[in-house]
Amino acid sequence: MTEETRLLAPEAEHIAYAAMMLARGKLVGMPTETVYGLAADARNAQAVAAIYAAKGRPSFNPLIVHAPDLGVASQIGEFSGEALRVAESFWPGALTLVVPLRPDAGIASLVTAGLDTVAIRVPAHPVAQDLLHSFGGVVAAPSANPSGRISPTTAQHVLDGLGNKLAVILDAGPCPVGLESTIIGWQDGVPVLLRPGGLPAEVIADCLGRAPLPPAANPDRPAAPGMLSSHYAPTASVRLNAFEAEAGEFLIGFGPVSGDASLSPSGDLVEAAARLFDILHLADAAGQPIAVAPIPDHGLGRAINDRLRRAAAPR
Ligand code: TXA
Ligand code: MG
Image (tube, rainbow, N blue to C red; front, side):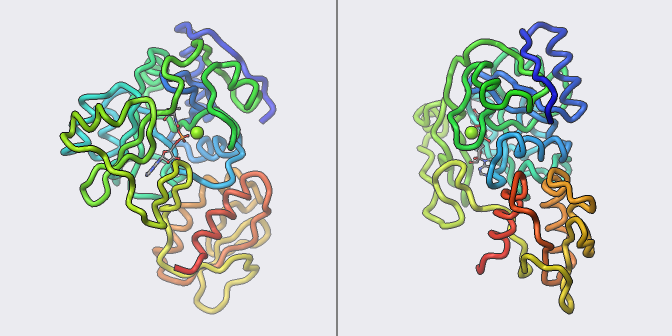
């Protein structure tokens, strides 16, 4: 992607243009009250893969889905009990809720990194709201910075870090909160603070009548945000760098290795990333041991290989 990024004031016609770019599968710099997001159509797997490519993320962390309101959010995730109560109390705002993914949500599996939960936020920023309404869908958006760099709180930060990887950045000035959203999830029915952020945990505790706990010291659920390793893991064994299937194996192909299903027959890493979790699910459902063709270890290939190594790790 070497197109020139347009830095546009958040006027109605520019917001409509940005929404059109989202519909075309392009990346948009979206101002929110917390930080600028790198937004893509959450239903478009190729567009979501392009987020990871733009950020140069070495692994696939699940992304936050942004919805215009609780009604739309409820089409993606299941809200009941405490999740519903905090959503009604604090949305729109700097709060992200991790809830069960609805089976009919229709979002790309790369958004949730294959998990059966989904992180959802309803942003309060008027430009984010206008963009979501104009687009008419939901967007996946991590912070709009290259992987490992600090989060952007101005449009210029986005341009400096990711310029020419986005179609357009809506410049709405500095983000009022300037810190990522607070992330709350539930483990065994207990609220957990997955990431402290723009909404103080104390006010959530007041609403719930109990404080969200630190996540359980489970090796699959490290506390540090972005370090989450509770990705979808196939039940079958996984063998890497396979050129041919051994007896009984389901071979996931790439490029010249066609296999039983291919991540990308043409060897395109963006396409491979977009299909990764769907094909892992498909292979797992086949109930056979899984073998995977070699994937080049550059660009999105690093994140794909990171995920495959985790899937292949002894457990
Ligand atoms: O303020 C924000 O939240 C910004 C703006 C753009 O909305 N977005 C943001 O997204 O910070 P990101 O991708 O940098 O952070 C997403 C984090 C992941 O690292 C992970 O910790 C958590 O959200 N997450 C997402 N889905 C999850 C899930 N299903 N289970 C647990 N944690 C999840
Ligand atoms: Mg981030």
